[in-house]
Length: 357
Ligand code: F6P
Image 1 (tube, rainbow, N blue to C red):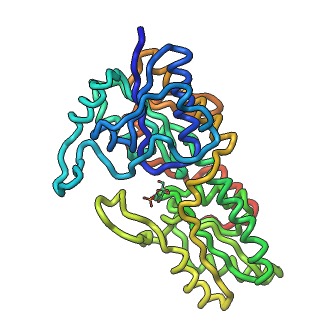
Image 2: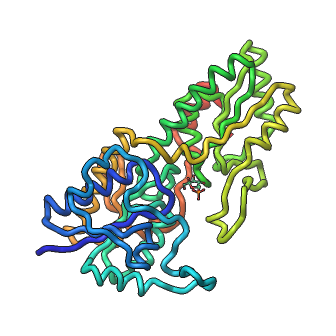
Image 3: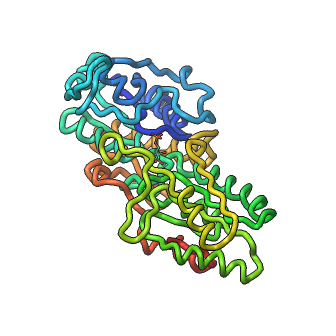
């Protein structure tokens, strides 16, 4: 039977989304003979009935391109939607479901992070089969060890640390690199280790300024006159709050940032070293996906379409070990996946002399 499946990309973009869209389209069309409709700008396009039909010819050449050809919206919820020209949020979930029916779609694939996938779970309920595909540079989706976009982000941050090394060493400076990740420290930990940083600050563990000063002093005593730190935007001190650039809307939407500029002043005063702060920002979400992210996107997309073929719904295709698995969206909706404090990479980092705070 010919089916029609819809697809959308929600939340912040990242490299590898197009690889997933391409694979979903090809598997659905070429393997099962199904039609694919791509809704534009995440849930916003679903509510506003903006979409395009996707055929294999529409996804040609997009494998290596970052971002998403479907567009994404970061803050649109079908349950609390503010229509253009209005100010009051409405529940637009039935409008969005009607939009799916109007294109003849009997299932929806949602490519998103934990926020979008939680919305998807609520949106589908018992009525519409939904299958999720995890993507986020933060790597904090529950139910999967890796999400699309993380590997490319780690490569970008590692490259930045490599480049900071030479100038830090030439000028005998302390360099603080602020990286993304929201409440999870995966990016700082992985890129910190990969780039040979001396310090990685992650939100899961409170850091204290005395320990940072001690690292700089210890290195100086050993004849190493520079220090490099990979700092999660969400890191904080014992009992403290992370630093926010703005607090607009619900707390999960508040914009983190600013910790390194703040730390640079304090560390400079205490160590009498020159300290510089750099925020990598949205560069971390750009660029061409690494081969690892392309392969991940392709295998997860394949697993997602296969799940629909087997009449599954309310699940996400995730990674466990070296295979894909299906996990319940109920699990995904339980909130972000943080770095466990007994994670082997923290132990390895400390064993090679890094300070992980
Ligand atoms: O979740 C992905 C992410 O890039 C976070 O790491 C970061 O805190 C946030 O999105 C930035 O959001 P925006 O693109 O809205 O500034």
